[in-house]
Length: 246
Image (cartoon, rainbow, N blue to C red; front, side, top):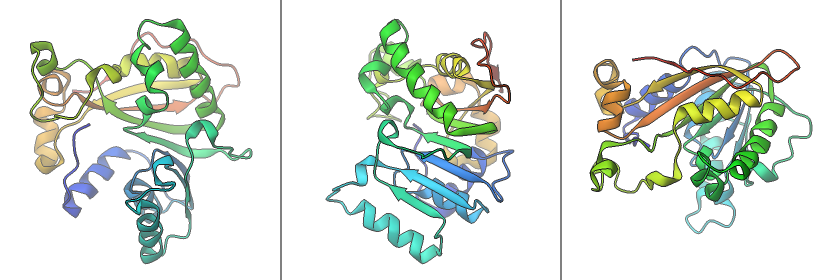
């Protein structure tokens, strides 16, 4: 993923881009793989009445992420943000559903071995179909799904060299947004839209100039996929096309 700058302005710019077109006021959100909680806290500050943050890495973390997360929530006065140190697979929502579900850089970590084989192995696809059915079950009809990750299609690994802009990315552990959209459509999500992201330090000019598939291919291949939980009770067939901007 393209790294967000540590400057507050860059973080805010990325959050506004991430939730573009979504009114978070009086909404509920599930943040899958919440990390340090920045997107959960942003949603709460933007008016969300309840945010559930799943972050398994905080459980027993020597770095004290759990304490840091809760301290930030306390300092911000955000009692509506609940940290649950569990994987999505282990999470029991107890029948609760959400208006917004966010997977920021976490979709490939739901099951890495399956993700690696996802584009050719039916068994791996079945693993993710089950996960996506649970995503649909915790999403309210008409609810928004936001997925960010990077595509494995990138210039540098194709040339056989390390990408100097994203040196830690293991490209074989990622999939294209079109494949994610197809599998999510099979679970009842509709209206896929892909936006190609770039460096937040460049702000709006960067989005205008570099927020397209070709530029992403030459940079970090980062994308944001947005979909909506279908309002129909039946599960629609997978989408053949993905609307892409840029």
